[in-house]
Length: 341
Image (cartoon, rainbow, N blue to C red; front, side, top):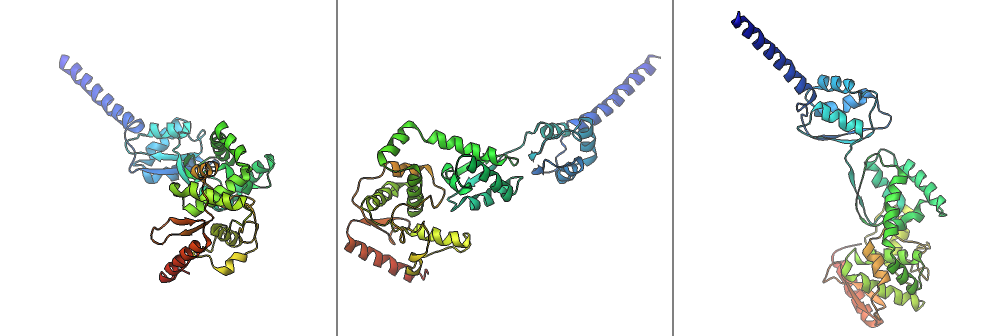
């Protein structure tokens, strides 16, 4: 009798263990075949979620069962989700229900205009570029600007993290906060002392950035040079402004490797060979160093600068027209020797 009872108890434990193990594996055991990311749009349905996650999991049926049991078919949040090895169905379902998505990194570079920038950015967002541009146009108009292009000064070159589901207003708010934090009372004081408007500061900063190639160690020298030209009433004659003027006409589809004499008369308010003064706006998104370079420009007497073929990416500076002519000839000869046209 006792033996029979022991056998029954043992069978109960075996059956309980079997079903307990099945329950554990179904809800908590690793069901991820390989790491990856899935995108769940706001208008997705449950079947779309299943189809998106299927390539990354071992057992679709168990995931579907747990998902329905936990209400994922009726309650989920859009987003970009990281499917990680070692995660069970419960982990995956809870992640999607809670909206614990993984951010994407966005590189904001020295884009020539906002449309170019948004075209790149929206490759990592749920919304398309037209939607982004239209919404940011509205933001610009609410701030008293003409359109999205006038928001360029709010952005700085750097790498940022955003969710795939970021809205245009959320996207802009991050940069507006950064812009406001950047303009400390100290910088505002230097702005007033410079005698320049903020738009002029950003326009000069963009020229400084392009001329320096983003190298911080020449920025203040270049800023001092262009301020010398501006305050003497000279044309700034910056090659990057000519390149920008041409690029604007071609929607940045025809890169200019070398500025030729025929380019210098390109009709554009940004062309500093054709127009005196500072351009009406920045010719690119800038970094913080270039703005600080204008606010803290080097006190020098330089009027001329020319790329230095002996030090790639750097320049020769001078106040002498004769010396500049020699430097320019050396650079032109170098370009010719490299067949750069």
